[in-house]
Image 1: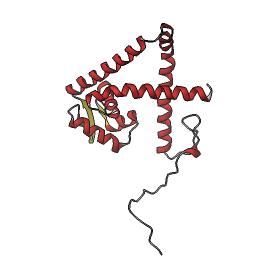
Image 2: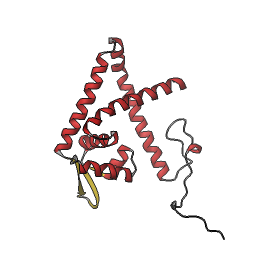
Image 3: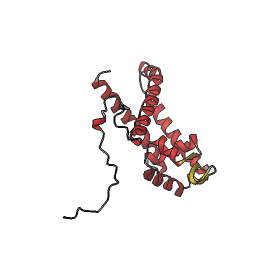
Image 4: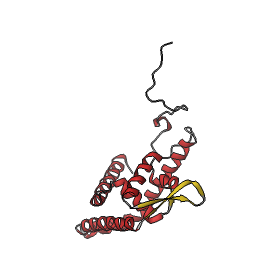
Length: 186
């Protein structure tokens, strides 16, 4: 696939995602909150580490999202029965209902738009589904490999995503950054 086609594919996927994410706004949720709610609804109960990995969020951001969803009564935190230091989250009945409405809104939006397409384009979308599903799974696996490489500090490893060199990755210091400190003159 040439570079221009790759750019077109990326742009259309992002536009579709933005439009479908807009359907979650009716529930008063951000797209990230709706996504986390969907994952917990469909796969839960989940540990926070596993949820962060699936969603691709850092622990601080995930904690905020989970806190909001918990305060809305859509999910609840529980102690992990296998590790009392860890937490798990599971969807509540209210959360299931909210996610069902989001899924129905998204499905209605998408099916309504697809119904307006010429029959040949609708058939082409259906034919493209297996390739798009494979692409999504392959990208997910590549991103996970990239995170694992960075977590292990393996910057010499082959890039997880084609076209992303290890030189393009930001350099990381082994020392934690200190906020608000200044070097003192010697």
